[in-house]
Length: 219
Image (cartoon, helix red, strand yellow):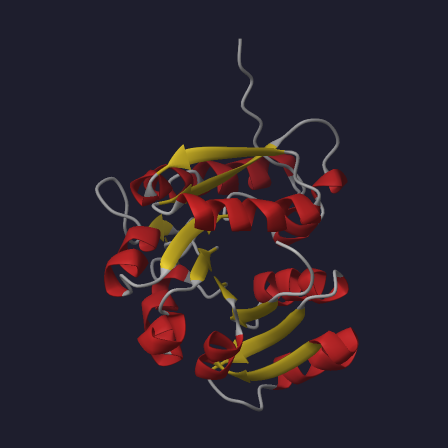
């Protein structure tokens, strides 16, 4: 992936702002999308990140991006993506960072989908012309864009049906500083990484910090 890429980010929460900020700092042109074109959090983010940053609606961000990141909550991801528009996503790499966390019954959250399906698969079915790649959902936002904050060797995963799309996303991940990127296979392998969230949340409670990550040790 040579030079500047136009990237649309769906979601103005910590994950969307952190990933978008890193990409803008790397020189990519980034549009942060939300339900409204005048979202106050997005406006503040734009002011912080200068000429490479802009804001708009979900549809604006999806239309703008050559690559689109879904950084919305998994429970509302399909709604947000439908708002972004299938035509604006067709043919594009769609990076899904969401998790199917259901907080409706309090803490700890349950998974709204698991075992035989995943949010990533639901997105791929709903938008068959997009090239969905699942990644970055197994760690917190600060580690996503700067893995060196966790010392030593640790890993990030990618899942998706399109090898070229996974290669493009892996190149972006390497620009964030990721060294070990494990390709788990097709989009159905996203079930596994989404089901890591319950143990991730328990580990965060045990460690009293979110600055940690998984490492697969092989013999």
